[in-house]
Image (cartoon, rainbow, N blue to C red):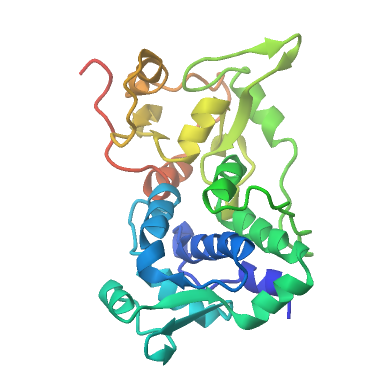
Length: 297
């Protein structure tokens, strides 16, 4: 059985680019806990808060209770649930899972495969990260689920799967004249730009193209905040800052909250700005909360 392929094909709602990372997050969390205790069970009432935090931080704005993936991941053949009554999940209700002492863990066949082939864990984690999250979030997500010490391997793309365009970064940085579209940062060491990155507005994992009108040149700080949903791009290509972002220091105010309502810097004339369809996807699927009013209002 190809466990990597099974992880890559988790059943979830993905119509129209809608993000549904609930099952992948639970499976990543379970892999991290397997690493700590290969035979341990995860009692729902004990891990509910951990799973809520993961969904809040890495899921879309329309949140789902962690009871949903805890119950439904069973159907993918990688997870099992037991209660005080015996094998089987009591349902996807929070109260049912709590009241019956529901516990979950990786399916027996998967646990056996992970013991036989330790590198399998990193390969499964790699495909889950690649398919559901942008690279800027991989490191901190691995840490959040306890996989930071595990080599995470990327699987070779099967024939027919689209390849990333390696020219994307250079095209986007050139279009924005090597400065952050949010703050104008343009640092270099000698002739080499440093701390500038090409951000996908619509994530590549969700069919975001490697095109200039789906890219922004951002400094490392603003790229991370953009992918976390603290920053966005609104009507008129003005910067959105989420009210959920909290920063009391002068640096946080200057570098983040003061950006609210400012127009993007760039791209240079003759270059396509961010397309509305990509901007809308990011606003609906990534940006969290309500935008702050424009700075100074």
